Image (tube, rainbow, N blue to C red; front, side, top):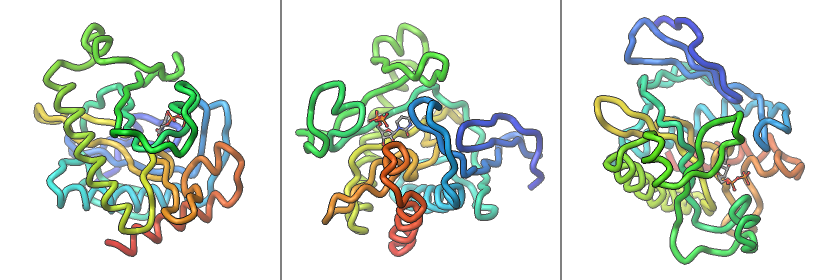
Length: 236
Ligand code: UDP
């Protein structure tokens, strides 16, 4: 597998073409940003944790019948993934109120929601990733009605599997963000699942084991990323 031209550089990853047009290589960086890029920093070892953890979770999801972009881990930071057309939406699932949801609706962080909920944000840094609803998505021709149904069904299914998985390692899955991609007429999971993109709370103590430690300057950032990788590794 030959690494080709840099296709895209994001805040936390680089994506390269390969000699196979159906495959890309993703390379995870230690760079961290929050609040739409306003806060910048480095979390040493984050790229390794996110690469390895995300790959283990993708393999676990595949075993549960969920198609993902994962193909093959190349090394600590790099993975071969399927080339997909990313649907430009952040799909956010919440089981427990936190972050922007708590702020927007005045619900205390930690409040268990009566049912899991889903929201979409438009992936557009210049606009600050605004929240968008299903009618907007249809009106702007971002996805079809069939795709919306496929995306929400897939996302809730992933939530169920992830909640059960993380429960086994003593972690509550508070909320998370995924991105979905189109390949061969299907919608598949096409981005990382890591402490950058999920809120993880220790089941016993509610200690935050995710990027909120960086966002909120809580300290021990590197340690909790490592701890999450260790917990996930212990189950795989
Ligand atoms: N999230 C993400 N990328 C984003 C925005 C949110 O991965 O650009 C994740 C975040 O880590 C959390 C969930 O989505 O697990 C919900 O985030 P929220 O809307 O509460 O935003 P925040 O409070 O992080 O600004």
